[in-house]
Length: 337
Image (cartoon, rainbow, N blue to C red):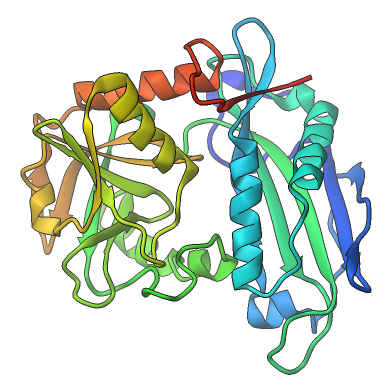
């Protein structure tokens, strides 16, 4: 294990020593095994390379103040992965197999979990069509891999906040496409728009709906939230938006712990400019305040241009549950022993 500077972790690959790999052949998954982190052989004719048949999940492991190791709602990741498998014509994984594989690898890589408050261990399960195919058809063989990497904040500014740009000339995913699953192609399509806004000195894109360019969809690789007059709103799920696990957690915590009114609805982009607070959520982003939103060259400051008080309280509550420091009435905290 290379020495890791826990005080200066960014969100980049710093792979843990071990990874997990399993194969689907002749109609069944094998038991899989833990191996050294390394390259993998793959055919040039593999379906994932030619036709993008693959998806991934994003998870984290945490070190609590008293030294325990925990994950957050891992079975929901298994459920979401299997939902994606059905959409992409790939074989599902038994939830227990998924969970036990992650746990076993986590124990092997436990030295890579940052100390409490220094970061998290990011967990990346991937499932893809590794079988050969020339025509556009599902593969006949599949590979499931899990690797891990200690990480710091997804956005360099962390909770200090980010500045975003609404774009109506690029779209993340149309309705009834694959936007509702973590298909690898969704993220390839987001690379160029993200480059464009970064050249404009913004941190990320806010995508609008592909049909009317009127309603907020997502923030790059994160879900979008807006607070106004005690109502916390997020775009409704309709096939083009990823059903984020953090998104669902925030909706629940907002209502149960803070008596906010949660709404899943169509949000017109013009509403955002007069919002009290705006933030985005995700496994990587956690809960990140949005300070300004720009559209067609005009920048709109949200509130007083600083992270909002409700945003901070929601963040502290969510992180407290994840780290086992606050009451968990929801069964989300998952200790790994």
